[in-house]
Each structure stands twice: as structure tokens, then as C-alpha cells.
Length: 211
Image (tube, rainbow, N blue to C red; front, side):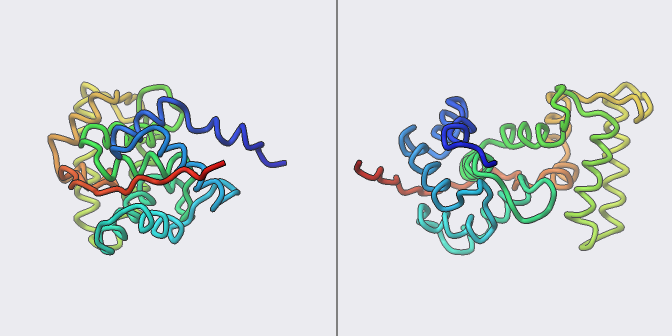
């Protein structure tokens, strides 16, 4: 049995609405309207890359290549199992981050995606997963350089963990974010987001349908 409409709506919390509103620079009601439109267009709760491009095109006055890149960034960041699909909540958060999120905000979300068990630290198992994702994203383009940067990542993480073996490693969000901000190569390896300061995205306010 699928989730009820009320359960689906609850997936977008007030905190989510506030975050999306502040980053996309639209009001709370507009965020809710977008979410309702997404649910109507994709009732199974999942959004393909083609859906993403179509939605961005409908709300964004930017150039086509910018829209395509933003769609690709969202799916890189939130398509955890690489099936080309993201859910509605993740899509809106991804849209907010790729539109106007700061570097630290983007990396904080990257940390959360790698902290699979949500205990506030990244452990050995989660680092292995991070490496696999990085290899999937980059190795086919430059395998030797990717392997070199991954080794540098491992050494940097061991250093952060006071020289302990990777089996015992526990990296906090603050440590992870600071490491990536200070090392552009590592940041580009493990973060699907563009780490440059985001350009202003002009977003058209949606119109709520009259009842």
C-alpha cells in the first residue's frame, strides 16, 4: 500500500520549507505550491532527471545549459543508488542548495549523505562507500589521478583522526567540512556540488491554484 497524501506532505517539514524558502528566495507558500505540483506530476514520489529538467525549465528563467547543469548537480548529489531517480523532498532541498547554498551548507549536506547511519560521524564503512561513489563519478575520466586523490583523502582522514588506523576512524561534520574547504582537489572528488560560490538564479514565483 502506498503512503497517504497526509503522510507524503509530512515528508517536507517546516524546517525544510524554511530552508528551501531562504535559499531559493521564495516565500513559504510558494514552496508548498511547488511541492504539491511535484506530487501531482510524480505521484509515486520519485523524480527522474527528465522530470527535473522540465520542472526547472518551468520555474527558472536561466539559460538552457545552466538548467541542464543544475539538474545534473541535483541528481549527482541525491541519487544515492545511481538509478537516475530522486525523491520529492530531496529534489527541493537539492534545488535550494544548487541555486544559492553556501559552500559550507553544500558540504554539510554532503556529509549527511555519507553519514549513512546518521550518528554524526563518518566511520570506516562510510568512508569505503564515499570512495566507491568518488570512483564512480571520476575514475573513468582520469583513473590514475582519481586513485592519487583518494589516497590523499585517506591520509588526510587518518591525520584528522590523530593517526589512528582507518578501521577506527570517526570524522565529525566540522572536521569533514574544514578538510574539504581547505583542499579543492578533495572537495571536487567527494562533493557532487560545484564548490564555487553559486551564481544568482532567477526564480519565478509559482501561483497557487484557486480553490
